[in-house]
Image (cartoon, rainbow, N blue to C red; front, side, top):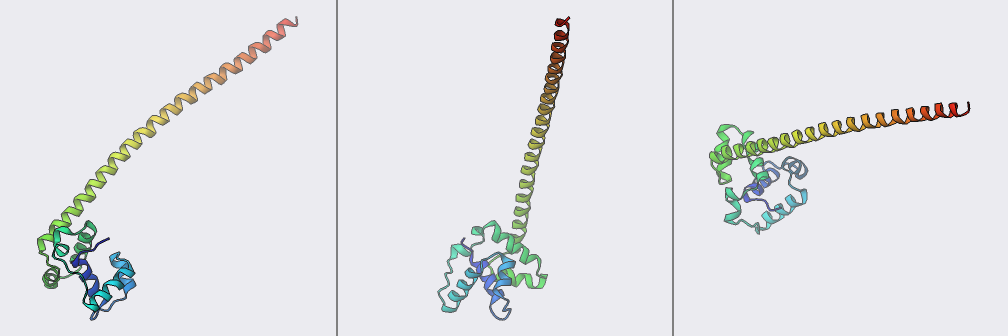
Length: 161
């Protein structure tokens, strides 16, 4: 999975001094594999860290990266938010728009799940109706079979006379 420059920069900032947090902790928080973070650290130390313009453009971020940045921005006070955004080449409008995009995605998924649930409930109701119909038919067949056996028993009893 390719990560944007903004996400790589954010992760590196957390694991390198002055923050110096553990790779495992940052990996759990961000969802970025620990080995990927180690590779980014090596590249940043050797100066071969790729930094393409297209990669750092906000419009090429994945929904997961956008979500990560929205969550990070939400945890930053207003005084530090400007610096956070500048470091990543973002504007406050990006965060607002992405937040809304993510909410819309969730709403759409919820609507889709509601439709699926409704369809499944209808299917269950139809199957229950069919089961009741078959149980009723089976009960009728069993009753007829019992009556037939009784009739045969009665007719056999009259034949002996």
